[in-house]
Amino acid sequence: MYFHKEGRKIIFVTLAVVLVIYAAMIFFVRDWTFFHGLFMCILLLFWMAITLFFRIPRRIFTEDFQQLIAPADGTIVTIEEVMEKEYIKEECMMISIFMSGTDVHVNRYPCDGVVEYAKYHRGNYFIASYPKSSDLNERTTVGLRLADGQKIVLRQVAGTMARRIVCYAREGEVVKQNQEMGFIKFGSRVDIFVPKTFKINVDLQDKVRNAISPIAHIVPAQSTTD
Image (cartoon, rainbow, N blue to C red):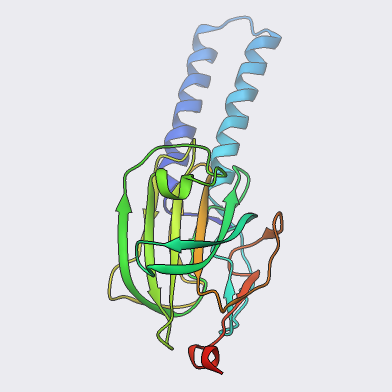
């Protein structure tokens, strides 16, 4: 396990604050009570929670170019047919993965492709599991063209606590399955929009892991006319 680069500064600063508070208490408090010890334990647990949030566990990635691999850890909260208006601009299937505070928050590309569209949107901070958060919350949209010309969309959606979306996607970039796409800090959601011909492999409330869990089978474009 290692810690993501997006969190290293936060981890260091938080630890420094905890140590300064501890040093101040050692200097100024002569007689420690139960409540002084409890306060320091709470601070230490807070720092540990921050540290674990940015953890990146070592994993054996699933490499299957006929499958879309989960772009995020979390729980499947939505599988529905929708109109994707930003990049695909047609009816497609949306799969939403809700990431709780205990999930790993790195986001990865579910397949190989070329980034044709990448845009950041300011927005609100409703609960990420709320269906309309995909359109109303702060978010980034990444449009990916597959080798056979089909399009998918990945959308990072901020939640109530998440106020910082990091997206590394750049238009024109060639990306690989399981390559890092970005990171969302402190609770969030990732939506993936795919052609209706793709075969969805997950159900509502399923738990998935980024770079490991297949979520949909890619049906090649030429097969859709058979």
